[in-house]
Image 1 (cartoon, helix red, strand yellow):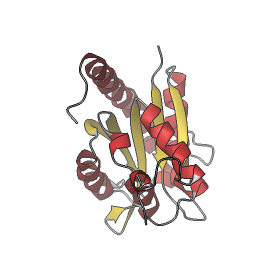
Image 2 (cartoon, one colour):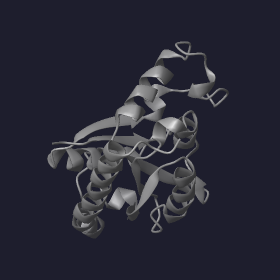
Image 3 (tube, one colour):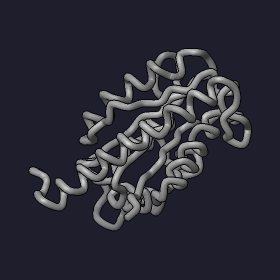
Length: 196
């Protein structure tokens, strides 16, 4: 039985390089038989956070917010694909994430980071770990960092060069860890209702 996984991506830049990595993750998870939905913050276009989803009266949330809430609630796990901006996290992805809270609870999240340089978004990945944990997700210990991204994935999201080979080698373990936690969380949710 496949798992429902959301792959979330948040760059709003005109020349988005991280889309290569997001597409790679979606493709590789689908090739393992998983049901994957790609959530592109730029395409959804939520406004800067004024009101969280839960702060709207029932049935009064904007359509895009209502749809996304359902997608998040229906997911078994999440992969956050994040670039690093000035040692920090992408504002577009953070804004999308902050519109919700309880919808994220009791599911695992994985972090895939990238940058134009050799540090592969490691500082953004570290910042996301605490943020996602605070939002009620179990953040898996396996991460993937890609950099320089232009020398790791081609424009059609295929691995290239030594970085691409390293990405191909690391992805199976990353996916195995995510799927282990998805199965564990599903079993626990089926056995026992969350405490709140």
